[in-house]
Image 1: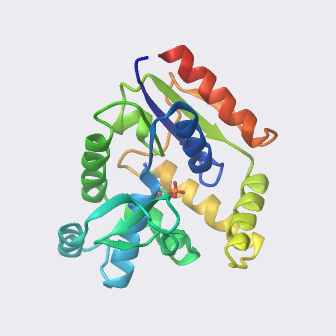
Image 2: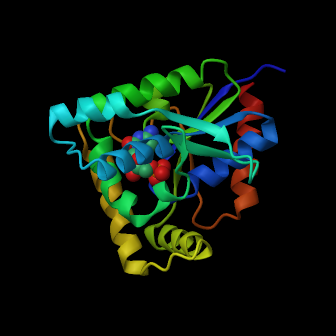
Length: 224
Ligand code: C5P
């Protein structure tokens, strides 16, 4: 059976990554978390005290970064590596969440990430989630999905996720962060988050996880 590219975009915290991962598993596809790449860049900038507003720092940052997805031998899961180190957990902290949209708004950083994402998706059979996948990374994707959910639901889910990792974060803080990221992501000049006219919209506010996965798998099978 032929393979396609599935582009999943949408607001922060509406379950894109977990859904995309499950869709990839169901179809035997490769899953690529483009947000993890922007998060890894952000971690590097924070650790190296680089400023996204300073072009020299941006250049230094991009030269110093090697991001890859590898199977963690301990968990057998595909995780994010920055310069050979596993950063999967660290990139999900509020410290990174609070700075990532500012870093992701820098055009040069986006260009470098998009190049790598396009290389990773060249072979088809890929599910990639993010903000500009259907618009910039894979405008020719056979299936584009735009996921939404109301803010309250998204914040509650994210709080539960963080809590499961032992990270207790106030619901209001999460809500503010999600809303602020949506605002910056949607209003930036460089490839803002937007729903493409050819994307299928899925509102997950009242959907069970399995149902949202099934809907996308069904759409993919029709697109093949
Ligand atoms: O998907 P996730 O919430 O982990 O993404 C973190 C941040 O990375 C987003 O809020 C956005 O600022 C940025 N991002 C982006 N373009 C993508 C994926 C993520 O700008 N394709």
